[in-house]
Length: 152
Image (cartoon, rainbow, N blue to C red):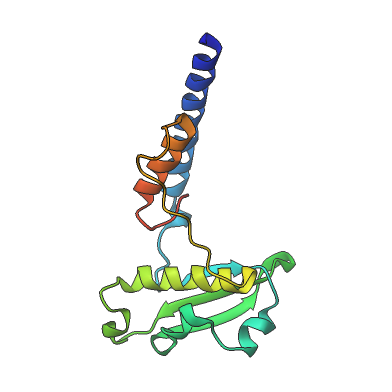
């Protein structure tokens, strides 16, 4: 029993240290927002497939208000899609969504469609249907803190 407690305490300590290192790194100068509003995603695949069929649904519905550019990723690691909202774009296109958040979600979904053929959605966690475990609690906390922004 004491061994399990020691392993659990060690796991918590490692998590706290890792979080402080990641948090410290994310507050560095290179991790801020792009000054011109560009967002980018690296896609594993052939850029010709992305350009030939036009944009998939996540980007297609926003294409009129976006500037999009596609370029090869460094080291033959697929291609990069860079996008930003045009100056003076009609905010009605985004509905009630924040334009930056909508663009981020559209890029992420387009990446998944090119790479896997579908948009992968996590199954909602079953509140109250599973016992809380140390690892499960950490994952739940990370999901709650991310608030749709992703987990660093």
